[in-house]
Image (cartoon, rainbow, N blue to C red; front, side):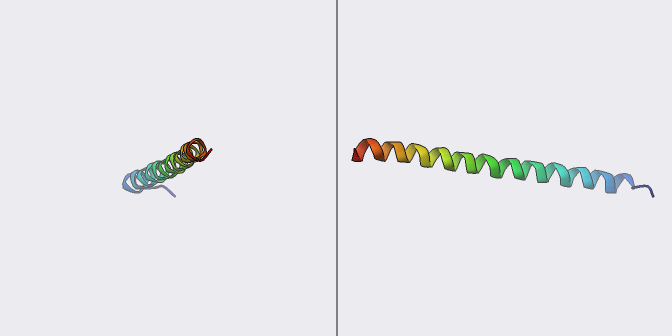
Length: 48
């Protein structure tokens, strides 16, 4: 069975979109964690 070129292109587009989405989510989580860490150290400075 041979994939048609358009199916193949769609498949690649899907894979790329999926990878980008996963990367985006990971970056957002990292930003959230670092933001929370910064917030925690700031509140520690202010409260301490």
